[in-house]
Length: 229
Image (cartoon, rainbow, N blue to C red; front, top):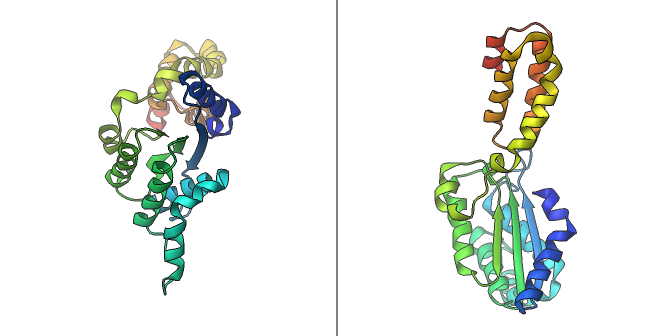
């Protein structure tokens, strides 16, 4: 997802789509990447919306006018500015809904690292998406948690294992090929099990493959390797 966000072609493709349809809207791409090592705030719903709002206003400062009155009102309060979830959602919606000549494309990576109830953040993004159907697109990645699969639109879902399965099989087979040639085809079952457990995650495949191969070279038997997996 981070590679996608950093690739200039994503903005160019969206701009090309705008040109083809004749709408010619400006394109704003904003992204938020959750990380299990991040702070509690960074992995909260407030943190996600803060990040998206910050990126949008940083990229297009002229859009700030849609929330300027709300911002000034908060500054005048005795307690100062408090960016709670309701205010963040209100401000983000205001910017999107008051900018019909702008197409917003939001990327949110690793939503499963969210600290809280999955249903809450799934409902949040569903609500934002339904309120801004004309000029907002959301691309969200996550492990297949039940609330995400049921709440977010399943008809527009990509499964990474369907997209990367062939590459993962080739990579894993190449790693184990020499060992299989020396010790027999039984270990091809191990390769197949790695592919099944991978769920499209290359980094997991790399770590698991090297750990299992080292263990196999140290003499661990086949059953022990399966248990380790």
